[in-house]
Picture 1: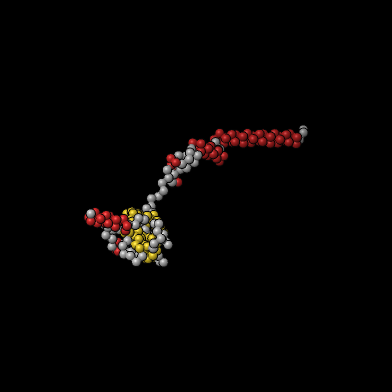
Picture 2 (picture 1 turned 90 degrees about the horizontal axis):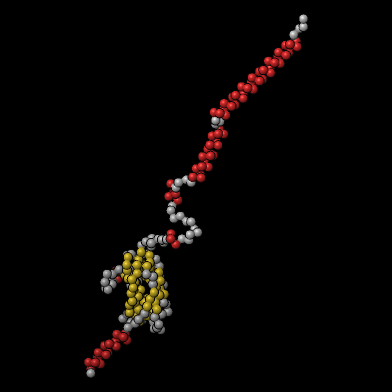
Length: 220
């Protein structure tokens, strides 16, 4: 009977001393980027708050493995508790100052003036600046009415010229050649007309001179 009572007491001790709470935070952040952690717990009791990101490879976390800072009245080492902070304050600002990669974010609560604490942890990815993957544009999702080209402008320099443009260009060039350089047939026609005009004018002049000579010839 005594053994059963002792066993029951031992079972009840962890239940009475446990504290279940939740917190929300980003799953991915950037190095030296300020982010927020919100704690959810329905209580009226005051708790000291300790929130940190660490790079420890086991459950034993030393102060040297804390790689974050938390904002209280000013930025301070995340190793330190913010006394009597919760529940009057439920949202906290942090930043990771070193050691990018897959890390662990932990929140610890302890009743003010007590030494025992309650801890919850979750994974967080710490990226170097500029490591976020670029937004991918899916060409299949573009509307059919939008004839957008995802190729750089330089890629279009080798694009073939349309046949219509070549035809128009050829016609313009031919017209310009005809205008500046008359064809041999046109040149021949111009010389022939000039010779004909010269013969006609020469005949008229000779006829006129002969007529004048006849008029002025002394009569016998």
